[in-house]
Image (tube, rainbow, N blue to C red; front, side):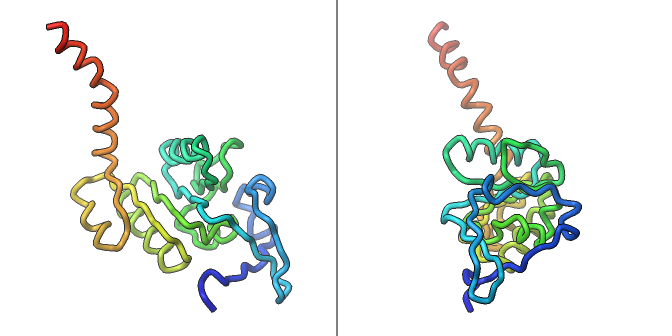
Amino acid sequence: MGSRDLAYRTVTRTELDDVRTITPKQMNIKPTEHSTGTTVTEDADGDWFVLGGEHLGAAIARRLQIQGIEVTLVDESHDSREIPGVQGDPENMDLLSAAGRADASKVIVATEKDTKNLLISQLVDTTFDVDDILVLVNIPERNDLVEASGHEPICTTSALSEAVVGTIEPRILEEETTT
């Protein structure tokens, strides 16, 4: 049985007491009956998970949503009704399964700690069938480590510095033309 053929067991309400769940309709998930009677979810290809990151993770998820991409945010501080997701620890693989998008095709791991990001990316890689795992790296010297683990690093230092320079670049050009 391939990893795309996984059937999810039905999760009881008691198991989800510590998780704020959303309805399948909000997540655009269609529950279907598997031949074994187990409820499975059929997700569209292209679904994204954003794991962790507090305000940064929420901002990434929001920008993906604006671009028309279906996204689920899993974060301990998630409380938005605008972004589908669950409140909980993104290290908890059972939580990701319960969220209904365990086999998303792309995952962005965005906590504030590089070591936690690497751990989560490895857990996701070994637990689920995910096409792409992108890992935010906060300390540039760790890019090679993330890449060596088989994941795509996104250096937050480089991304932020490029965004800042891109924002101020018109002012710099304006100053150069006036002098």
